[in-house]
Length: 257
Image (tube, rainbow, N blue to C red; front, top):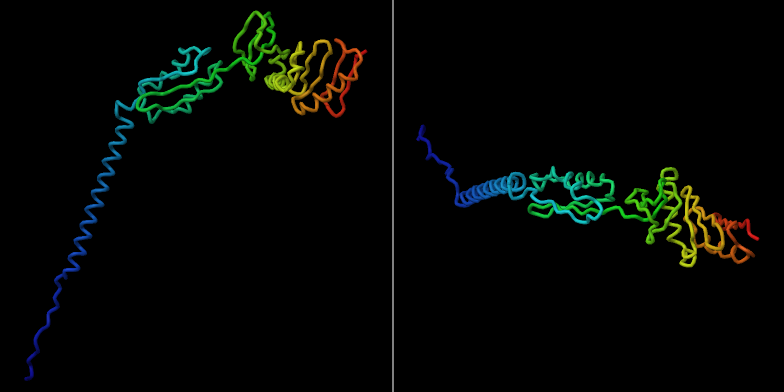
């Protein structure tokens, strides 16, 4: 009949079981992420407290190793500022740099020994040679020309070098030591004096032979061969004989008989 409408069809908008399960999984994942985030924050806060605020992870002890000539008090004076500092904030590199300013210190290693100790290992300067002192006696110096000690008698265990470190510089001293260490045993045994005016002007005197102008430490093998050849052709070597092997390809001898 006109005016009558058919039955109304309503859409069922209730979530299906699959949709409900999916939403439940999403909520569970959010809770897990939230729990993880909260846990990370707690751990970070706890870690920060332990490293920066905890009284158990602070510098309580400074252990000193390697001291023989250097005064322990001079080292403790530098390290005193680290006492009570959080271990993680102890600047080991800066501390080592400050300690290296002590005159007899060559280098320093500083490491953390958890939970509360800094270990300071000092590498001291060691005498490598003796040089005559202006007022008498001998200054014991290392390879850098730094004075380690001063003695009255000539030291038996160290080479005596005629090097004015103040004028010629530490490189001249190091060059003389390099030449000395590179000589064969028989030549070293016959040395009466070794000196240098510069890194390229090393010389030495051989007992019964004369003076040898060596030059720089380079080409040591060729210079040794040249010196032996010159000695072989020198008739009567003596104090005035000068062997110049600074240029081993064109060696020269003068003053011999």
